[in-house]
Image (tube, rainbow, N blue to C red):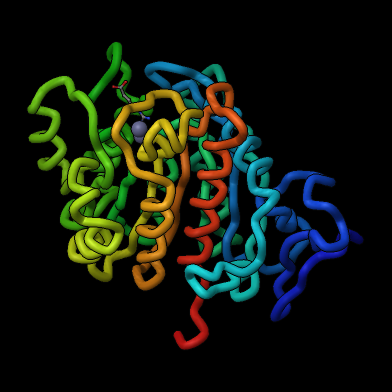
Length: 323
Ligand SMILES: N=C(N)NCCCC(=O)O
Ligand SMILES: [Zn+2]
Ligand SMILES: [Zn+2]
C-alpha cells in the first residue's frame, strides 16, 4: 500500500483524501483512485486507450485519457443524485493505459482486444477511456468473449455503422457495423441515442436498422426528456447484458467542444448525466467514453463532462445496499 492518506470505506481503498492532500497535488489517476497494483481485489478497472489513428477529421483523441484523468480531480466520494458512494461499495482502480501501436491500426486493434481480455481476468468490469471510437470494436470483442453478444447502448452524434473510409474497414465511423457482422452484439437489443446531423444518404439509416440498431435521435430529446430516453432504452435492452459506449460528441459542442467530429444540436451534459442514472437497474457489463480531444477543449469543459460521465457510469455499476 502507498503511504498517501486515502479514504477507505467498507474495506475498499478509495480516493486520496482531499482534506489532507490538496486535490491538485500528486498524480492524476482517475478521481485520484488507487492504481491497480495498489489493491488486491478489483471490481471495476478504468483503463486508458490513447489511440487516434482511426479518425476521419480532427486528430488528438490519443490525449483523451490523460485529459479526462486530469479533469477528474474534483470528483468527491458521494453521489447525491444517485444516492451512492461509487468507490465504497465496489473496488474501483485506475489500471493505467494500454500501450498500443500508433503506426499500425491493425496491430493496435489486436493489442486493445488482448489488453482488455487480460484486464477482464482481474476485474469484473472495465470502463475504458478513449481514444477514438475505433476502439469500441476490440473492446466489444473482449466483452463478448466473456458475456456473449451484448446489447449496445450507444450515445453519439454519429451512427458509426458506416462501411469503409478510403477503403479502410477499421475507422472511428465503422466499429458497430463490424461488431454486428462479427456477431458481437445482440441485434435485437441495440440502440443509438443522440444521433444528429447530415448523413451520406438515407441508406445509412436503412443499413443501420439492418445491423440491429434502433435510434433515439437528438431531435426527440426535448420531448422525451431523460425519463423518456431511459424508458426507450429499457424497452429495447430488457435484461440483456448491456455495453454502454459513449462518444462525447453526443453532447452539443457547447458542452463538449474538445472532440474530433463535432455536430451542432446535441444533448446537454445535464441530460446525459440524468439519462445515465437510469442504468443502475440494467445489467451493465462494460462501458467506454471516447473521442475526447483536448487540443480543442477550453477550461476543461469537455474533460469535466467526460469525468462526470465516467462517475455516473461507476455509480450505475455500484451494487445497491438493498440488492
Ligand atoms: N465516431 C465519430 N466521432 N465520428 C465518426 C464520423 C465519421 C465521418 O467522418 O463521417
Ligand atoms: Zn461521434
Ligand atoms: Zn462515435
